[in-house]
Length: 335
Image (cartoon, rainbow, N blue to C red):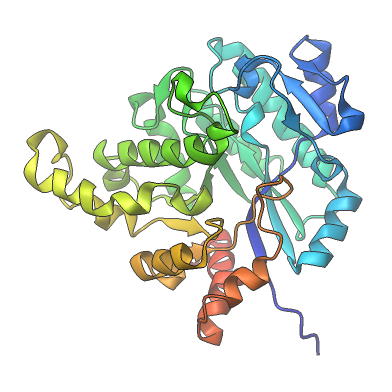
């Protein structure tokens, strides 16, 4: 009998080379430093300043290297999404966004073909456009994606914008697993240095975007199976403040129940990189609402997810739920 423990990583990325070469052919990507493990992508696609180097380790596009890494880390299954650098957060042309998103979904599905059940794609949808539900349907029904990945904004529209109502309705009706990853950061030159867009901007962006989902009534109207990257970013630390605003500020009392009620329905990955913070996440939201997430294969990734879960000191059944049990229930629609 095998003693291998199932471990499902819901937060992993891939950047297929066919997508990069397609972008390069349109003047939207500079591949001249691939040998150094770097790519540069136009700001309209990447959402970061022009010429900024984006790490591109071979595992982003080399399945053999990815599978070897899985064996080393103990992960038995990855849910793979494209990274935020091709999510078109700052694009302004809907046709361009649709072209990049569709090409990216096709390339990701092709890259992982032949490895399903171990490497499974999450299809990305184009936010800010009425075409989002149809692309979500195409990903689930035609490309074999096991769920959907979304950013935090698109085409200048926030997640609570009415344009997204059909998307939320579709995802709820399909009981789809949805992984939310920030694809933008709050604006301003204060984030220009020290890799702060990723270190501080992404966690803040998640908090802003999901606060709008709550206060905009989206989570009241739709029972989404939504998992947040990076342990929800700054959001868990805002539970008390959001509830306080709901109770004392009329403009923030937009829902029948306080914000914390809705946030406790959501799921959070383990990519907090702090055992005390992760323990608090389990305390606040429940062990059955925390899923393994590594942010593989970037430098800011958890390289020992089994150790991360073990450090929590959970009972065996609880640890098994974090490693794979809850994710399995969400993917099969039984949660």
